[in-house]
Amino acid sequence: MHEMSLAEGIVQLLEAEAKKQSFTRVKQLWLSIGELAGVELEALKFSLDVVMRDSLANGATVHVEREPGQGWCMACSQPVLIHARYDACPKCGVFQVQVTGGDEMQVKELEVE
Image (cartoon, rainbow, N blue to C red):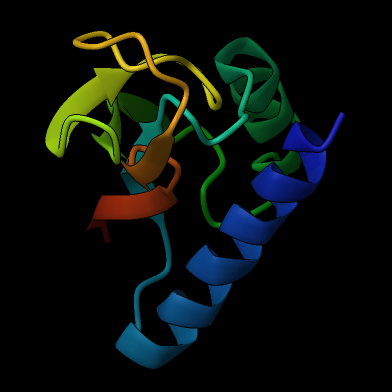
């Protein structure tokens, strides 16, 4: 389950930012996770609950925004929405779609004290 290591990385990022910006507690955390990022949301939420204990984010509310998968069809030269890597183009049916977005995961916003 790589979601545990992702959660640990998020807490490390929060701790590094706390040192830089001089805050002591994270009250709320907003994450943006692309549909193509390969992240199981329930496993990530569980992992965050575990690793945020005894950290500056203990008890923080986690909000997740899901970003759609985006691609560029090389056959019909159109931007398209896709739900999985290697999907066919929903417009022409050809399997020549290059991923252009929705494969990222990032911390979008924090509410801190």
